Every structure is written in structure tokens, then in C-alpha cells.
Image (cartoon, rainbow over all chains, first blue to last red; front, side, top):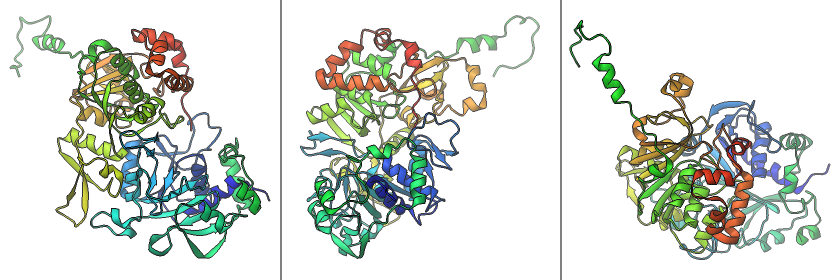
Length: 269
Length: 314
């Protein structure tokens, strides 16, 4: 059975919602949204998700080829102001793609380099990251694992709270912060190492630990049960194809690499 | 109230009816007149979200004025981008400025990277709480949001306080009180009863409630009977005493969407991005802004073509 790297990553990302039960899952970006949709169709049917606009859906919409919201499986109105009522209740798990992630699991989507007055590159702004990170579970999706994303120091703009003792607010424990998993094009990580250190829990086919270390700006721990990332099942691939009928997933990663690569192919990518 | 004793010699029109007619409120103004409420140095709040239901015709009228040094509060799109590019802005209070399908708003990005504007960058939810505090007359609303992040380091004027009820610290999100709010709604009557028939009214109700003066542009004017339908009345998200001016501008949200009437104009946004990148505000305004909304609509292909724009589907 052949599958693409994007499909492997979608399946690994879908697993982060297993056991979450009735939570609002939000996947930002096409592959994260596909992952959340897949989870709702497989490992967590109780999950809740929106149409990315203003309604909660009983069945996820396709991520490609949608021409109209007419006839979708609406469950309740869910305008943006009401999203916050849910976010702040804690019953949510977001899967997002930050531009920078540091060793504390702090992230950045606001701006890169330069100064506060004049950043070198203005990105989106902090959006809802501060509130998400202190209120509910978060996982991260990284299409290209590199030292540009996994930075050596702290993020240029810390948009979300992480496991940084120096920034821990009064009355909080590091265990109040809930960063679940990081899915990249090389591996799956969590922050389950000593003192919440980032830790590799599975490597994608053909990927070596050195490859991950060479592309990460900080030291990482390795899980005792380190193995290969689970391959997509036939059922998962079938549902992915249904949820993405126009194959938009093939355009998300540069050159749409296959899921099973040789070590040389991984290094060359 | 008058004593209601009937009297035979008052037959044709009752004094009560005369009084009722004399006091029917009419808040309808043209854009030029409505925008005169905005003075240099004021704080304005702009409704909508990214590329959706932005009061763009009112923003364009502001671009044509000599107002400057504005503080702008918005869930920003090209409204914020254009005002920054035109040199109208002293400070932006924002959580994002984005066109969604074009994640980075081109004019805002340029303005930021050249360091021309002050910013207060806050969480999307903090902005909502600030508007609620403003609307309710509270100096602040406590929240966890922002703790542990650079939102607090970069906004030293946002206080962190102890709670009288627990041992944690809390962000005291200060009230946001715009002098003027600009909003685009689907329709309104002359008294300022506004309907938003789009799937989401975003935070527009809170902008209207927090501001001292609210100007609403609408695609259509309706009679008050329009609201007798309870399904329509449920799409009125703030009361008319929070609307001070109504401006009838069909297509007035363009290039943002006014769902269900028209979608946002992807091609126009792309051209806007290219013009800003090549020649800045002047290049865009030379091609599109004109002396009036009629000029602008002629330059973008006319109202009929705006009405043809497909609604977004994701």
C-alpha cells in the first residue's frame, strides 16, 4: 500500500484527538483540518468541529471542492464570539502550525526578527494563541522540520505560554500547561522528557534520530519506546480521499514526497 | 399622559398622532457627512473580520478626508492596511491583520516593517473583553488570557492583578472605548435598527456598544415593518440607541464580503496586494479610490459585478 508523507502526517496528527471525547477540535490549515476531520470519522466520533465559519457540524465538510455551505450537517450556530466561550471553558484541542517553536513549547505566529517597532517580517499577529495556550490542549503541525522553526533561543515573539518556569504566572504549575504532540515531516514529538523537555516518540519511515537532531535548534530527549510512526490504514486512506476529493493534500508539502523514503531521500529533501 | 376623555370637537387628527409623526427619528446621512464625526487623534473601532463585512466605503471616505493620527481597533483586514498605507494611523490595536486566503495583509506588513506605526498587539479574546468592559462601563475585565506571553511584556500598560478570591494573578484587560465605531450591516431602517443577515455578526455588537458614536453603512434601507418578522428581529444584535448614523451604500463592503448579498473579491485583493507592493498607497488610490464611492465602484466594474461575487465556501 502506498501513501504520501502528507497522508502519514495527517494520520499521525489525527491520533492526537483520540480519547479527547466531546471537545471542540480546531485544525488550522488544510492538513491539520483534514487530520481533525479524519479523527471525527475514526478515533473520536464524539468530537465537535466547526465549518471554519459560523456553524458547528455533526459531520465534517470536505476540505476541498466545497462550493457552498448549503445542506451541510449543522448542529448549532457557533459565531466567533461564541468560540471564546468554548475556548475559555477548556473543552477544546487546537492543532495549529506555528512559524517558530522553542524548547519550552512556546510558539510564534506574530513577527520575525527586527525590533518590536519594526519587525523584519510581520506575520499574522498573536491571534488567539495566548488565550488558547492558557485555556486548553494544543498540538502543533510543522510541514518542514528545521532550525528556523525549532529555534535555539526563545521565540522572537512569545505568542503562547509553554513550559518556561521563568514565565510561569503566579499561582500556576507547569502541569497546568497542556501541550500534547508535535507532528513534523520527520517525526512525532511530545514534551514528555525530563522537566518537560521535547522528546521524540516516533520517527517517520527512513528518518534517523540524527536527522531530527540536526534540524532542531535545541536538545531533545528520546522516548524509551521510540518506534516508527504508524502507517496509515486502508480505512484511513479511504476516508482521507473522501474528505479531500480534489487531492489538495498533494499540494501542501514541497514535491509531495512519498510516505516511505530511504535515509538518503530524507537527507536530500 | 393626557387625560383620555373623548371630546367631540377633535375629529380629524389627534394631537397624539401629530406628536408621533414629529418625533420619527431619521439617522440617515451620506458618507461624507457621517464621516465628519471622526476628528484627527480619535480612536475608531472597525467591525467585520479580515476580508469579511468590513465598512470599506466608510473607510474610503475617511481616506479621502484630511483626518489623521487615528488609533484603530479592529479584527483587521484591508481596512487597517489602507488606513496605515495612507498615513492616517498613529496606533493600531490588533490581534491580527489578515485577508485569510492571503494570510499576510500587504499594506499592514509594509507599514510594520518600515516601523511607521505604534502597535498594541493583544489576543483576539482580549479585544472582545476590552470592548465588553467599554460597553459595560467597567475599567477592566479579569482574564487568564495573555499570561506567560509577550502580550504582557509588550503592553506594559496592561496590568496584572491579584484576585480577592484566589491566589492566582489575573490580566486586567482594560476597557476599549472607541470614539467612533464603523460597521457594515445588511440593512437598516432610518431609525438605525440594523440587521446582519450574514452567518456571523462577529464582534460588531460590542463595537457598537463600546463606542460613543456608531456609524453603520448598509446595502439596503428598509421600512420598520421589515423587522416585524421575528426571524429578522433575531438578526438585530444591538439596539438602535447604539446607532447614531446610517449610510445607504449598496456594495459598500467591497472588496470584503457582505454575505448573503456578495462574497469577497479575491481578484481585487490580489490586485490591491500587487499595487501596494509596487507603488504603495498612491498606486492603489490612483487606480481605484476616486473622488466618491461612485468613482470607486466604476473603477472596480460596477455594482452589478460586485453583486455577482460568489460567497466564500471552505
